[in-house]
Length: 109
Image (cartoon, rainbow, N blue to C red; front, side, top):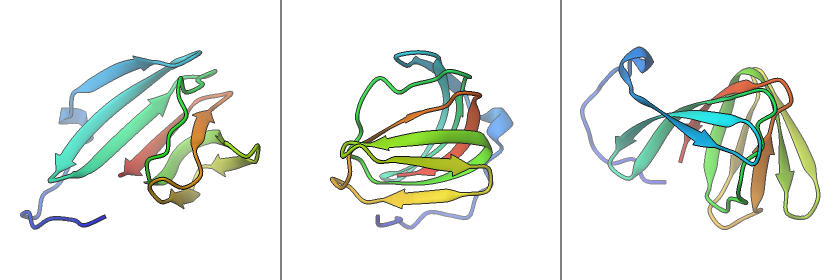
């Protein structure tokens, strides 16, 4: 990831519009800010959420609240709890996320 030059700014998430996305089950609420080609997101997954796709995009993900499971295409399952982060590069392990009780994530990709 190359972070382009842009001026210092503060993100007030209460001012960022949200978009509701349907999963296989449950929903994800996305708030998105773009800084050049860097996408910065706050995601809220409802209880019972499961992503509707396998993702091969690289991410830096930090769990702000709750917990989620990330299933890798090779069958491994990783548990991300509040206060934990994970990183994965573009075109590496394909992954999809789910949560039993819901979670809030901060994502940069």
